[in-house]
Amino acid sequence: MSKVLLVVGDANPDLVLRGDVVPRFGQAEQLLDAADLVLGGSAAIMAHGAARLGVRTRLTAAVGSDLFGTHVREALAGADVFGLKTVGAPTGLSVILSGPADRAILTLPGAIDSLTAGDVSLDGVAHLHVSSYFLLPRLAAGLPEVFVRARAAGVTTSLDTNWDPAGRWAGVRELLPLTDVFFPNTAELAALGVAAPDLAATGTTVVVKEGAAGARAWWPGGGTCAVPARPVEVVDTTGAGDSFDAGFLAGFLAGEPVPRCVAMGVVAGSLSTRAAGGTTAQPTMTELLAALDAVPA
Image 1 (cartoon, helix red, strand yellow):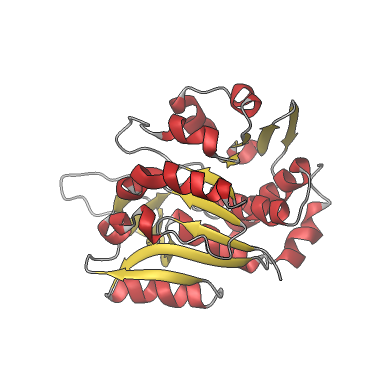
Image 2: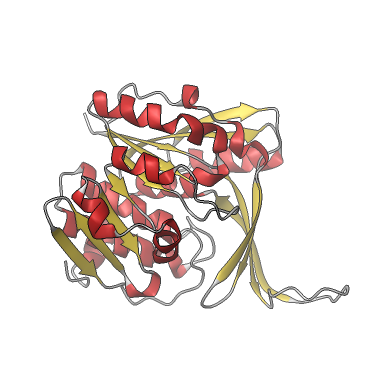
């Protein structure tokens, strides 16, 4: 039986706006080039991407019994991902102001912060991945216990915190020693104030996403590698880091060495930027492997 990946975190629609997206107040009206309502939430995008790659994937996330919740359920059903919890709060929503080289994200948390440690079941799970740590404070409070429980059960773990809107970065440093794979980007690692080689020396594999430059990794035992990004015609970078996580973990669960996993992540993340939103252009495993030869491992 294939290994099961459990993804825990956020699920919501993303409204991705492109064109003249830098707001000008004073009731100025601006005209857009495009607007797309797509599946969002880092955990949902990651789970969708992993399922596209053929990984047996479960998602633990919360949505409301509303139109946006229906949108999320239908999008995930198409990727054969299940595990959504329905709560009394409205489904969260993110508005993405997407420019050619950067983006701004406005998020209404809504139902996102309805999860607790008690919602995380490890039955039949080989790997646990947690996304959007700072949008889920109730879950975050119990994550050390969940990660200890996972380690005792032989379940490997990974963490992608995303940005902390409060700027405090509290709790993450205490969780990292219990984490097998940590997925920060360059800015997040700098904000945390930890050095990747030092963290790897304590037993955590650190995979740093560097956007258009690709990714670097450090792992226990002194190993390190760097993989450049695959050149693509970029439409929207929303969710590229989550697609990267999916590609890396698809390799990780298949027993691939870290450099190969990083290369798989880079290809998955790069290819996902070819269309608006985080999931539209996510590759299948056939597409990923076909493109992999163009990325030095």
